[in-house]
Image (cartoon, helix red, strand yellow):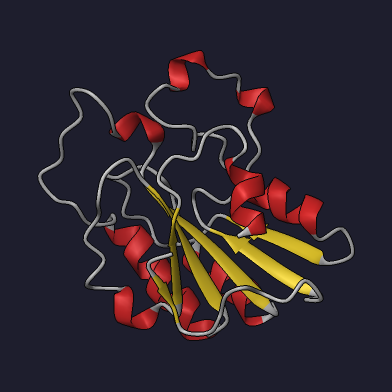
Length: 168
């Protein structure tokens, strides 16, 4: 837990939860040993939240691409609309698991442009938002940190990562 301005833990009695982001319903959260994992055995955050809160309406929206070079922000407006109508928002951003590990270097340790825009606009739309970060290295968050009420760094949590994120 990197930051919590009283947002976490979310109440288990929420009626509508938005799970947003390019890593919200993505099985590529296992980590650099992903060559040995079975995607069908991996639980996404969206799946974990749905399982944890069976009586709540859990809505998923991508918002933007996971691809570091894709700056397309055209999906952000739909994600913002979903966030506006939610009691709680879980915003999942970060790196693809293949971007970390041996022989994977980056010149810049910040989120891609589209993910930054997604974070800023979703947090503006719903103040009851927790950012869940998936990464294999430290990332610079100084350009978004002030806008985000809660930040949870999951690194790459493995096949049960979606259940763990939902519980946290």
